[in-house]
Amino acid sequence: MHIVHTIAELREKLSGFKRPSFVPTMGNLHDGHIALVKQAKPLGDVSVSSIFVNRLQFAPHEDFDSYPRTLDADAQRLEAAGCNVLFAPREKELYPEPQTYKIHPATDLADILEGHFRPGFFIGVSTVVLKLFSCVYAGMPSGVAAFGKKDYQQVMVVRRMVQQFALPIEILAGETQRAEDGLALSSRNGYLSAAERQEAAELSKALKALGAAAKAASPADLPGLEAQAMQTLARRGWKPDYLTVRRRADLMPPQGPLASEPLVVLGAAKLGSTRLIDNLEI
Ligand SMILES: Nc1ncnc2c1ncn2[C@@H]1O[C@H](COP(=O)(O)OP(=O)(O)OP(=O)(O)O)[C@@H](O)[C@H]1O
Ligand SMILES: CC(C)(CO)[C@@H](O)C(=O)[O-]
Ligand code: BAL
Image (cartoon, rainbow, N blue to C red; front, side, top):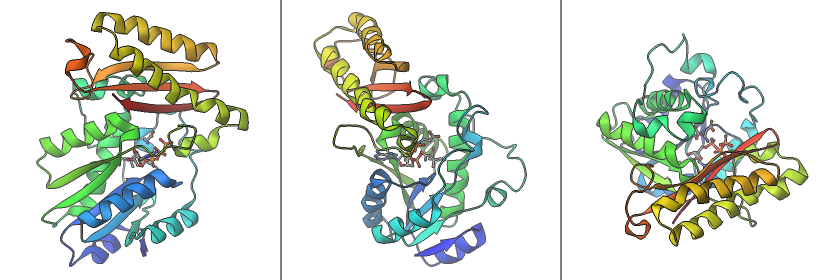
């Protein structure tokens, strides 16, 4: 595996290939990331991953500074997974000057849920993803990029961007990899104390319970069920941002009979100072 830190080196290592399979990450890799690399690899002719903690998508009070940076261990895991090129740019390489040209996904999709609770988040994500895409795919006839369903809304925002800019990139959405107790794997799980780690599986349990209750309900019942689910977590010491049942197609609240369209239950909540997100398709 080649480890490259500049765009020029990346392009040099990719010259001669026609269809990169790419997994962008912020590093501190776990089995969720590795599963994405393994799923995407057979769909392209060279496997590329990036590690870049993107300041643009963090609000000033968020965890940009404390985000775990574990490049050596990450490189070992990627090499074992069959990655061919690891792109790990320094901040000055990707942002040599303040990034004043930004992608503003000003849509219903990007302003709700995560976009509501983390204003600016999808601007930062879309901007860096487009920039990473341009580093990896420039001059390529096609490509594939893999994102995890754990960040459900992020996959949808990226898909929409790829469609609106007519990028020749296929977006693969990988299933959420979980610990045995159901907790979605996430780099931020590393912030949890031992007691919090035990409690953390309650988020996926709450989504499951809300999904089961929603199946037997009508749309008018949903706000009450969602409020109950948030209260249950709050009583256990969580600070929930949202637990909600949405249409998979556009993440809007369902209008018609709940059995008639594909739905997803999404949640975000803070346990101590750690904010976790998860979701479950029902
Ligand atoms: N448990 C998981 N299963 C599948 N894909 C995942 C999982 N966790 C993260 N991913 C995906 O890996 C890619 C890189 O994510 P990132 O580096 O932010 O990791 P993360 O664990 O989600 O970190 P964070 O704790 O910051 O949310 C994203 O597409 C993300 O959706
Ligand atoms: C897609 C991404 C790498 C952009 O920084 C990040 O949002 C992530 O790791 O999910
Ligand atoms: N995994 C999504 C990136 C973030 O939370 O900043």
